Image (cartoon, rainbow over all chains, first blue to last red):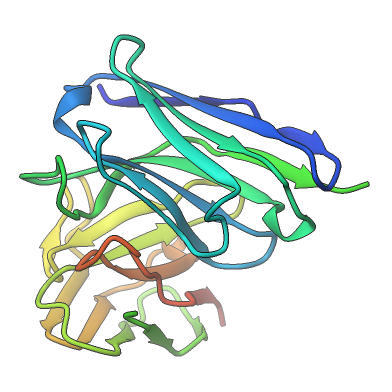
Length: 124
Length: 107
């Protein structure tokens, strides 16, 4: 069955860095783009970043552009989010997400599987 | 950018009630609309995709409809497990915008 196992959250000071990881199993990793979403405390869901199945197409939300870097490692079946210059407003639970449906390599699809989430807290 | 709105923001209902949540997109998204249920401390759970297709394993009391810019999620007979927050999401573009959510609580 599909599994998305997240790691790497924690407490970091403003201006600091953190790397989130998402190790996947149960599906053909190279067939799907992958995404990160986040949810600030008491708030709704927000898309953060997208990487195509080949890794050649990458998008970021304006709120994280220039500070976050998404990447993927096919051999390790893993997705990453390198976060730097962190701000208090980046405090959130971060979810990695797998799309569902056909042709989800480089188009846009709904999300059928989510990781359990990683808490990122930015505070001095 | 596509904006998504939902109404109501909160809905108080009783077990057995029929409830309807509305989601509107600021521009047409065809049928590229999904509905998720989220409970506190948990990841979202996919209910409906392509506006009206029920995800495998989701009870048939969840019904999605609509296309273009206006969509609805109906729960035909509310069950105790359905008290949660519901989000619509467009996947017509890579911004994957969500509605602000509708919290369904116990009347």
